Structure formats: structure tokens, C-alpha cells
Amino acid sequence: MNKIAITVIISVKNEELNLPFCIEKLKRFDQIIVIDSGSTDSTIDIANNMGAEVLQFNWNGKFPKKRNWALQNAKILNEWVLFLDADEFVTEEFVNEVGIKIQNTNVNGYTIQFENYFMKKKLKYGYGFKKSALFKKTKGSYEKIEEDHWSHLDMEVHEHPIIEGKIGIIHSKIIHKDFKTLEHYIEKHNAYSSWEAQRYFELKKNKNGNLSLNQKIKYGLLNTGLLPLFYFIGTYFFKFGFLDGKEGFFFARFKSHYFFQIQAKIQTLKRK
Image (cartoon, rainbow, N blue to C red; front, side, top):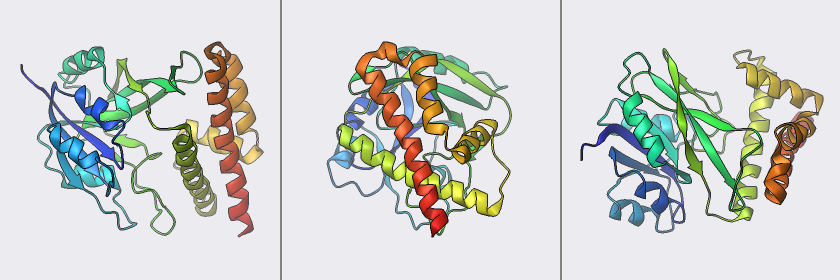
């Protein structure tokens, strides 16, 4: 069977629960690279046993972070690179579509859409999730944010890929399904909200205007204090999240609380 000429890069740390399911579905891709950050569980053994290449990334607190570091240092054998998290699982439909669309020489990257699971249930409603995680290695990289003195995240989580030229869309979705606990979800988003608050504070302090429309809307609503309320009403009522049952309610509530955390942490930073 001819392999699809894509290098898949998976960023991990202690992902023994998710990684086997992620790698298992990548057999048709030519190269799989796992970038680890000092895992203490069986993550590395799983990656090696399943045929992936493993590289260790030790962050020094400065640019580049994990994904940009991989673009600069990993021996990437293919022109196209697909970035995944360990809790993101490709489907056969996705693989088939990607194999066809990378043949289009007029496109340098693709936006990928996700099918989200929360508390073990597939969510059919609410706001969709997408990101441009498939692009030519010579045409894209993750945005650089000046954060050497304050960031505590060694991987690009909220940094968006900057891709030269035309960006297409992959219509077949990737499954986003974390097998870790709800406590891990809460802990992770607590860390993310701290980063978001610090970035907002730095943007305000430096008067940085290089923001996308969505970012301007988000930060504008953070200014008013209305983002948590607007998000909950939008995703639960206008986007019919209530049709997903109690899981839809909990997801909308947790996500709106995430924005509330950002607002509260911004106020703490202002007082400092």
C-alpha cells in the first residue's frame, strides 16, 4: 500500500491513555513523529513500539516552543505536515480526503474541523472547533508571541499557524476525544486561562493591534465582562447545545467558566 506523503507530528506529555488510539489510526501516513516533553508514564514506550519516531523537547522558556521547534529541528521527510494532539483521532474519511487534497498545488494549507466529545458523549451542537493544522512545511509556522518572561506552556496551544498563500478546508472531521478524567480537563483549562490572561494583559500594555477579527471580538467582550455570559447563551441556546443533554449543559458551563477565569485573572494582574 502506498503511503500518503504527510508527516504527522504529535505533541505529547504523559499521554499513555490517548496515544495508542491516535497512532493506530495513522498507518496510511508516511511518517509519524512524537515530540515528548519528559513523560514519566509509558508514553515513550508506546510510541516506540507502534513505530513512531520519538524526539525529546526540553523548553528553555524562550522561542521556539514545541511545534515550531519540530519544524526547525525534526527530520521531516515530506512536504506536508499534520499537527495532532494525542487526543485527536483521524477517521478513514478524513485520511481519504486529505490524500486527494494535498495533490492540489494551488493550496498551501488546510483548515481541519473536529467532532468533539465531552464526558464520553459526542456533542452534535454548540460552537464548532477548527484549526489550520495541515500545511506545507516551507509555507507555514506557528505565530511568535513575545512571552519569554511569563509563559508557562511549552507548546503552542493558542498560537495560530501563519500560512502563506491559499488555505483550503478539509470537510471530513477529526474526532477530539480525551480519555483522561474531568479533573484533568479542569486542571488543563486552569493553566490555559492563566496564559490567556497574561497574553491579554501584555497586549493591552504593549498596544498590539495585530489581531484577527475573532480575537478582537473576544478581547472586546473580555473588556466588557460579558464574554462568559455571551458564550453560554450563544452555545447553549442559539447553537442548540441544550439538545446534547446534560453533557451539553456541562460543556457550555465549563467553557463559559473558562472565560470567567480569564477575566478574574486579568483583574489580578492589573492589581499587581
